[in-house]
Figure 1 (cartoon, helix red, strand yellow):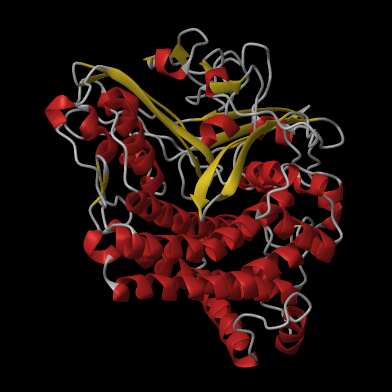
Figure 2 (cartoon, rainbow, N blue to C red):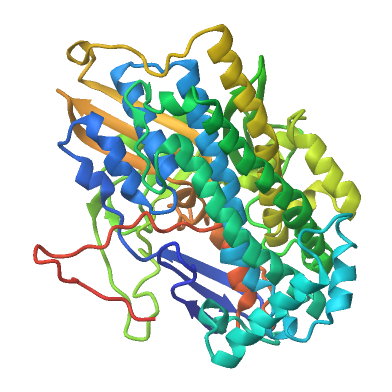
Length: 555
């Protein structure tokens, strides 16, 4: 038996540790996934006024600020009993959907693509062949001129010759698991650099309504504050101009790259490498028009697409059998954040399999579930969504795969790209709803209320689909003071440790059965975990009162 420890495994989004055991054929037989830094936001919120929670809760993460901000605000609004006007809902949706698109593009190109792209191989690309290769996946490839590809190759050469590889320095050059040819690698790197500009432009789009990003401040109890932007045609046009630009990148770069990925890694797709649980959960949402919505709600067990259960939030529990906390299995708002930490051995291995993560184990009706883009696409397809199903069918027909093939580490990337395409396309419908509502109904952006008359002892909760999956915030207030605040983030679901019955979470389950070509360079493990887009940045760095580090983690 061989053991591999990777710590940390994520590139920029927090501390995640993975320990896998391999048999004599280098197949993963066991896996432990640990969140190794403590998130204490729930504790920080205790004894504060609920109305203060959203601005603090959005600091849970430096990437997911918008979604935590909204979920917290909505949970507090639910607690106080304050609704929001239609315009406010649409604007909140526009910001959220823009973040979906930005997050998915950043994930693939800047957090994950280098698990598939061999930089050293790209330096050997034939420019003319690369130009021709791009036309195999798109009739009008994005920035595919000979001069542009030559410039990209020269830029890469400059990095290499100067020894300034930065994040490129740690990828496994010439690894046998890389399957792109030199020209495909160069095309991907071209889109990698272009995606940096797209990321910046989407940040501008979010800031048009959000005021700034990250950590926006456009939401207040009962609505939004950006009425001047909403009523300014130029601001709306600026927003739409960026979305059209991004839509062009998705159609001519991102989706073609997914076709390229699908073709190059067809064997891994058919082998269902990184399959996971086959259990999926969605809470749906983002309605527009008279009766349309982007995402369906439902729960699927064992990839049984013929039987989609209705989502029932009362079936959610959290337990800490293998987490560094005390407590019993309970409903989210009945749980506490009582710490019970055990350490590692000197060789870096876990001191005990009993407790090994700061992440809790949420379960739905007793089962582990996967949440995120793959779950939304699978549930939408199973429920014959008039929005999702045509996109999935089109990709399957063009690339000769089946719906079951999406349950792989390649399939998660494809599902995420399709979702980005859907969100970007339908943002225009949400803008039309906003303009129509302003023109024919009202320009109200905030609900009027008297704070002194709001209920002060109550519970509130909010469930949203966000880029990485289902996000929920729960608040319990007594006499206008928070006595308990709990968050179940998407990565809490996917990266959860085993439960009391030994059932693995999605990450661990997806690793078992994985074949590793070279244990010294376990790129397959990285691919599987990163296909979920881990976000462990919901951690707080604990310092003492003088600002000194209490502990350091050496990798």
